[in-house]
Length: 596
Image 1 (cartoon, helix red, strand yellow):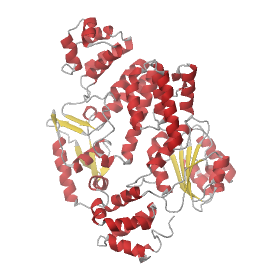
Image 2 (cartoon, one colour; image 1 turned 180 degrees about the vertical axis):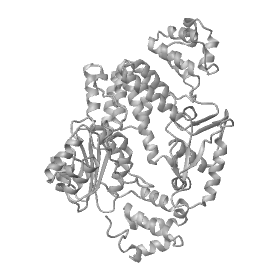
Image 3 (tube, rainbow, N blue to C red; image 1 turned 90 degrees about the vertical axis):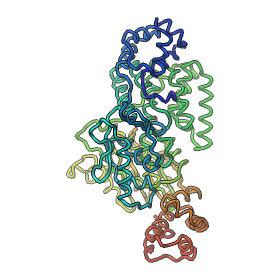
Image 4 (tube, one colour; image 1 turned 120 degrees about the vertical axis):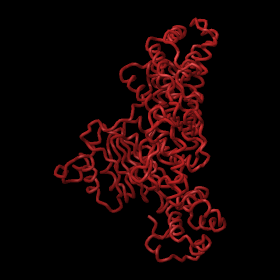
């Protein structure tokens, strides 16, 4: 977040501490009774393990606390955070060095496959997934070609003196086996875990230093030079992880009055996420705490205007309370609620349901809807009631895909589980029974009546953070018995019905799902068909887009028809659609009829 390219923490730390103190190199060297050249060598990383006595003199010159002095000495004894033999960096543009030499893979496909393996270290990634990401959905390269690519990649990233292979074939896929210092993501996670332990033990000053070291590893958004992987759910999960750490860092720094040092990372995040209320609340606090209350109030007005113009909503409770605290001159940090580390279910004997269907491969568009859902959740999580969002829309418009995609984006913020039900004509009592069983209730303990089952479900969810996705509801009465009743839970309901009863009585927030714009429809088809095939017949593509009317289900069905018959030209497909001819294979699942 400080914008430096270096992965070593000592130089980063000394440089930042000196700047926080407002000292030049000469002034600090004189205070510490060391040479200016020696201090310059430290800050420019020519010395990575200085003497302890030197570090203690630097700490005294900076008037550091005992905890900070101890941390500075500890940092100095560790040397570089990242290893010399293999250094993989994904917290920004992809960067690779082996045995001290920079490695340029050149091949976009190799870079993409390595990126996916690196953000899931130790986890096998299936061959099909790697192919879809590197070659594009619908591409069918020869398996021998893919294995040849992986073999070359394995040789390029294998350190000379390391006996165990870094890239291994495992369970029909591939996995990256790296040590902590060989991957910046693992170093980041280790530092954040250490900072969280310090916070829990009351060592806030030490936690702030460690958070700052972790943030120093972030050079840009993850894999910023690989736009083709940015929409993958695993990248969304990584971005949420980094965001959570930033919020924790800001809260810890505010707790001990170190507002200025978090201004830069908060500003950078807010600029790229202009509607993110939690970050704006922290930034307002940091501005007010560093003597800039007028700027903080101006930021509030800007955010309020953007939320109203783009989403039609007001700022949530956290931002409003921070605003009021600044107006009253009250220390704004008292208004903030620190973001706790994401943890699993407190009771390991209780099951944690993870019932979400697979995320939609090649999900396209819906950026405004996703931002709206994010904003509703950010506001709602500070409220005393359960968050309920309805997604009404016409058949085939992509309500279910949007709900499932967003649910995967935020799944980690619901550590007690995610419940899912395809409602349709299902009986509410049966759905509640299934939820109770998933939450660990024995079959013989499920009550007979719907009322009792609903009461038990609400009791089990009290105090928990569970996301519930209720798909294809037929009406309010079907949904109401399924809803959780306590803060921390959220329910996302899709339906062809507007579900006005939920909006009126349960305070649900409606988000109408409309058809896709032409640009997003085109992107969806290109991802399904492959860019080469889609671009080969631009006139036919435009006609197909017009006939499908922006309905994702129709577009998906058209793509399926084209992919299952590679000899079929898009012009012929467009002609069939134009003339209303529906082959037998579409009779029960037409892209233009019977869409659900």
